[in-house]
Image (cartoon, rainbow, N blue to C red; front, side, top):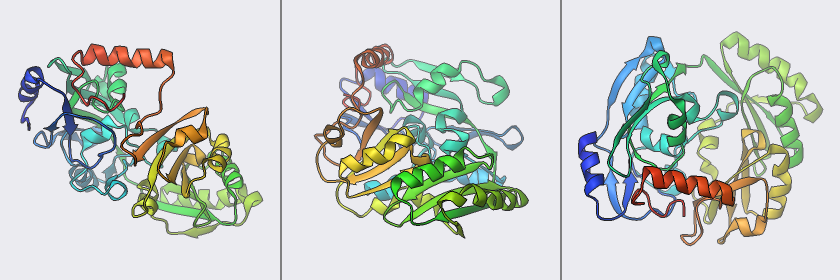
Length: 359
């Protein structure tokens, strides 16, 4: 099924006699959704772009590459730098903006500017009953009703099928540089990243790779500002060593490219940074990568449910790649699970949208 308009989509959903599995570019294939494929790739194209207003509106099936090209031509960007899952998951196709919103995909810059949902101004979608719904606005000055906009971001298509999204964008960057420390264990690295992020020098990326023995700190902005902040950050990091300034591929860190060709399960664990080293110590992973100052752990493990090994902890673990019999998402506490189930029943009363993904 491949709708060309919201009306087509609403009719397909209303007439569906079984579950539907929503697909944009087909690049984010994790999860256990079942049903007939609902291909959204035909609903594509930028419908409004106002560089002066720092806003862009696009249909959900629009490839991210098309959006990035349009923004780059005007020296602008999507500040939340959405991850590209293709190498990690071994998928092909083109990532779409709708898929990025549905999964709230956000890169290393989240610690400084926010996540995908923080730049989302408005959405249009069709719910599981076939209703066409609009929430929020197309430009910043007209935005109202943020709550539903935030709710759709990260709902993985279980509340509705996105048809159009609008975003706030930011000017592009004049310069980027990275300071790198070596010789730190995981606990020292988290302390160093916390020190850098709590400084006034606007660190926009803080990542630690134990295998490479590198702890990285990214600075971005105007040329003179970056030079000044890099010089001052050296003093902040002095208790942990003398950093070098190196060219760094932050897209590779964002996409966890180091795990791409390695066999095993890939987990995405969100925790309080200070808890991360102890959690890693007991997970017995084959390899790990820290992002978001230690608040995000990427772990490569053997088969099996890592959550059973970790036990109760303050955070959540998502299986991005691996065993088909292991639940993708961290089981929710009973009160939260009841709220989530109630929301899904309200928006998708027949339970046909990406059925099985959240179960």
